[in-house]
Amino acid sequence: MKCGGRVVHIAPTAYRPALVRRKWVVEKRIRKRPKMPAREIPAGDCWRGHGDPSPYIPGLPEDVPRFRSVGVLFGQMACCTRCELAPGRTQVVPGVGPRRAKLMLIGEGPGANEDREGRPFVGRGGRLLDALLEEAGVNRSEAFVTNTVACRPPGNRTPKPAEVRAHAPWLEEQIRLVAPEVIVTLGRSALTWFLPREKITQVHGTAQKLERHGREFWLLPTFHPAAALRNDELRPLMQEDLRKLRSLLEA
Ligand code: SF4
Image 1 (cartoon, rainbow, N blue to C red):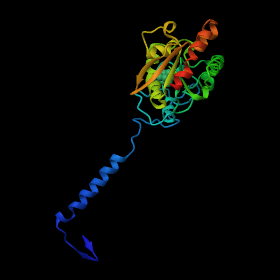
Image 2 (cartoon, protein in one colour):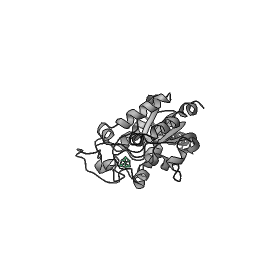
Image 3 (cartoon, rainbow, N blue to C red):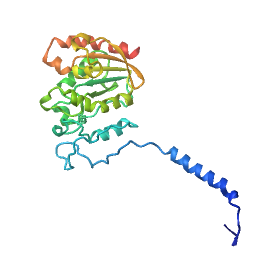
Image 4 (cartoon, helix red, strand yellow):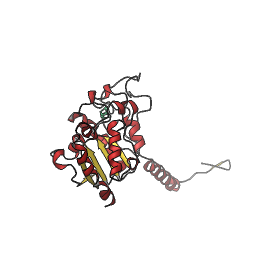
């Protein structure tokens, strides 16, 4: 070691504590480094829908890591090609609403309007949903609204079980991050994801306590607004089901 131009010899044991301390500081820095999602897909480097010149690679991302925020989650979802709905979409339709909401509404899948605008429940079904929620004393802006699949099924068909399963990690991550106290399932697809043996005609309007990601919440099944548009008899049933919403939210 040099000291004031002179070479000073230090016994090896004399500087060992300094080396140990330095090693400890480096280890501490490594431990403190924030955890990154397992795989980051840079924006513009993934296939996002019709008209995107990026190469289409089915199955990306194969796994769905845990995310720190809904925004990061949606950034990755926009690139998803995990199921056969991807090639037919204009864009992925993510959930919409407050990042932390007491109420979550889960529908079936995007229709033509949603596929074009990139938001769930924007067509006639969405307007009916707004009206029914308003009658129940709930404003849609209070709720986080999403679907069992985020890409439009061709011809507005019901999503296949394999498509719902492929999308489920994205849906579950939304549930974990938004942490709702009440989830309203709109239609059979969403109900089946939570209660696979139940029939919508038998359990609609019956609230049940379920647990997901270590949290309890109320599940309130009802019909899909699109079904109520096709069948007038379902509208009063939906009205009655959603009337229970306010008391569940205040419970
Ligand atoms: S529906 Fe979900 S899983 Fe399927 S491609 Fe779209 S985002 Fe991915």
